[in-house]
Length: 194
Image 1 (cartoon, one colour):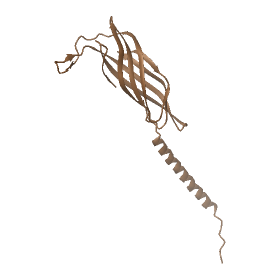
Image 2: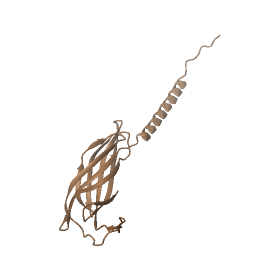
Image 3: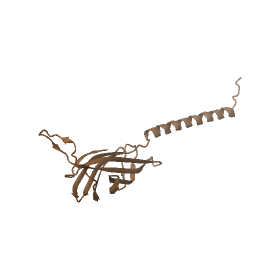
Image 4: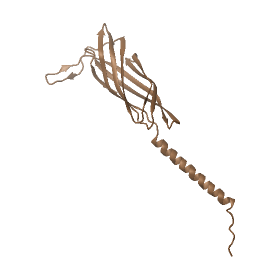
């Protein structure tokens, strides 16, 4: 004779639900960990490619010039970077001598955007330039000397946000600070260090 089977007890159903819930929670946690490790927001990378002074003049101890800076901004994120509140400042002796707002914009994921900023710097008094001559540069024919130089500092700051899957928004900031050395004699850029 065959024994009739009993329907599963409430204990077995409860245990099955608990195991299924724990499994789902575990899967959700693993997916979130993988998601945030792959889509973790990173700071944009600002690289200064060139600095130029198209016009340069010194008169009566004041200096006046046009400043041009060429940069590339790389977005290493897997999402679009929207920037706003961005600016380029020019400092001499700790005082601001030039300023420019950078218009808001967007940089696609994994893309690099090239930017150029050119603006006229109002006349400002130049500090005492030492009469001593700088380092000797040799050209193979006995060399020549570089005269006094002027050092300015450029600060580029970009603020923005990265929105992952149109749901998670992360605020990111990037900045580049460069020291630019300028020959006082002709306004040529001797070099820059960022």
